[in-house]
Image (tube, rainbow, N blue to C red):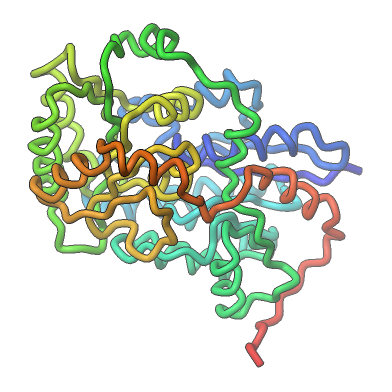
Length: 384
C-alpha cells in the first residue's frame, strides 16, 4: 500500500524550491503525493499563484484560506489562527503519513503545530539556518523541534539541528533543494522572457526582490526608498522588481514599487510573481540580483551571478564569495551595485563555491522517505 506524503506550500518562492521534490514523489512507486496550498498562493493581491501549481500538472488536494488583507503584526497572528483551523480540517480529511514543509514562514508554523497534535510526522527542509533579522529565525527552530525528519542544506546546519536535540539518524545533509533546477529545469531565452513579461530586455538588467525586515528597527519603507534611489543611479540598466512577501510591512512596499515602475515603464517592470522557471531564467541572465531574499544567498551564487544582500534580514546564513553585503541606505546599496558590475567581481563570481550542494537534493529526500518504516517516536539527543 502506497504511503501518502503531503507537501505544503504557502508562497511562490517555496513552491519553486519544492517543484522537483514534488515531481519525484509523484513518480515514486511507493508514495502518493498530496498537495496542500495556502497563504499567498490563494491571494489575488499576490498573483493567485496556485494556478501555476495546477498548470504544472499537480492535483491540489486542499486549499486553505488564511491570509488576511492586513499589513500588521496582529493581522499576521490572526492569519495564523485562521490557518490552524483550516489545516486541522484538511489534515483530518487527508490523513497523510508524512507532511513535508520547507523553511520558516508563519504559514508553515501554523500547519506544523496542527500536524504535531494530530500525530502526523513532519519532514522539515532547510532547518538549522540562521536569519537574525527576521522572526522567521525563531519559527524555523520551532518547526525543527516539532519535526521528525530533517533535510538540511549544509553540514554546519546539520550539526546545529543535532545541537538542538535531534537524533543524528534523522538529520540528513542533502543540500538546497532549489538547486535541483540547475540540473533538471530548462531555462528561457532572452527573447522568450521579453515576450513572456511583455517587457523588452534589450539592455542589461537587475533583478530586485525586497522583503520587510521583521525583527529589526529597519523601516521597510525607508529602506525600500533608499533602494529605489540607488537604482536610479544605474539608468543604463533595466530593472525587474518582484512583490515582497506577506509579512507585516510587506504590503506597504507594493504601492512604492508600482509607482516606481509606472514612472519609467520602458525601464522598470513590476510583477507579483515570476514563477520559478521565469525567475531562474531571469537570474541566469541578470547582471546582478539585488535585495534581501534567501534566494540571493542560496540559489543565485550557483549561477555565477552577483548578489547584493541589503540589511540584516539574512544575517547569519552561510554565503558565497559572490554575495556583497551592504547597509540599507542609498549610498551603500549603490556602492555595492557598482562593485558587482566590475569585471574583477564578475570573475570572483565565476570562481565562487556555493556551499549549498550539488543539485540532487530531491532524490536524496525521496530515498529516505521511501525507506521510512512508519515508526514515529522522538527522544531528545544529548550531546556527549
